[in-house]
Structures are given as structure tokens and as C-alpha cells.
Length: 218
Image (cartoon, rainbow, N blue to C red; front, side, top):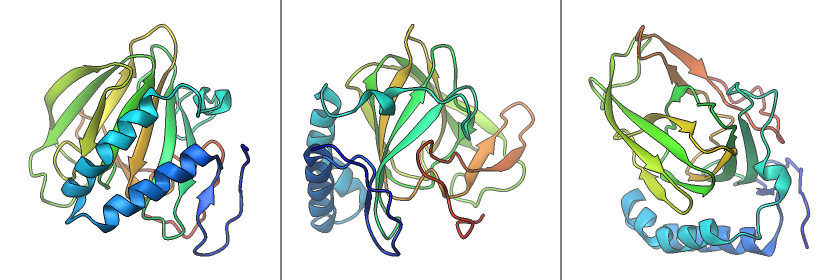
């Protein structure tokens, strides 16, 4: 039965979309992480289940596939939290980008998987001059590569490599991507980049359906 758990007890997991599909997927992910030697190994082990989640038409309600007029990313982009761990070391969410809109250039600061559930996207990945160094107030970026992303396609994140990107919806309908990342992505402070001016600003995307606490500061 579908339900929503908005509890915020310290250390408690939050299933905002509380279904058997989501719980089984998260349990599998945790099991694979526990038996993996590190992030790269964990990603390889999780890929088959993540692919099946992208192919399943029935588990994600319409609300989680809807744009949001007021959002931290702007442009009607909606970031819908599905699950986050009590330790804030794992989150699952849907990112909805309206047709013709694009995200800011941003980083993630976490390893994980991103895959397309609906629509089509163009992803542009940027490289920093020194990807191993901490991000500073001005960062010169260059385009590393671009690629088209279609339903069922997915790709890994393994910072610092390929962690800075933007996505644009190229389909006539909104694109919906599913993110599984090893942090509380909507509530941690990250970085938004301006490739033209090299300026960097603190960035927190937020969630449409969950507020972030003040304690999660930059």
C-alpha cells in the first residue's frame, strides 16, 4: 500500500514514498553496499536493480513526475525526495525538468547512479582545471563531453571525475530522472558554476516535498 512518512526522528530513515518496490530496492542497495569494497564496486553491483527500477512503469506516482513552479533549481524543476537514510548517507529522488529547461551547472559531492525514467535529455559534463583540489570561489571549466540520454539510460557518479554537469530536457514532455546518491543531495550545500565568468556560488537545490534543516549549513 502506498503511503508517505514525513517523520524526522533523529537517526530514522524517511520513506516519503513508502511502497514495497522502494523498500525492496533500498534494502538491496544497502546489502550490496555492505558487501562491496568501495563506491565503484558498489555501483557495479547495484546497476542491475537500478536498471530494472528505470524500466518499471508502475512504481512512481504522477506527483513525483511533475514540475514545480517554485523550486531551488528554478525553471520549474522539481526535485522530489523518495527516500533518505537516517544517517543522511543515502538518498533516492526524482528530478523533473520541464521541456526546454535546463539545470544550473552543478556538482553532487557524492557517488551514485543517475538514470532517465521519462523523456529525453542532453547532458553536458564539465571538467575543472584541478579536479582533485577543493572547489574555490572561481573555477575555470571546460566541456569534457556531451551526450544524449534516453529512457532507461543511466550513468555513474564517482567524484571528483565527471561530477560537474548540467542537463537539459530535449523532449516535448518533461524529463524525469532517478537519482541514487550517497548523501542527502537536496539538503547539503553544493556548488553552482558559471562557465562563462568562472564564478562559483553555494547551491542547495532543496526538495519539493521536504524542508531542509538549518543545521545542514555550508
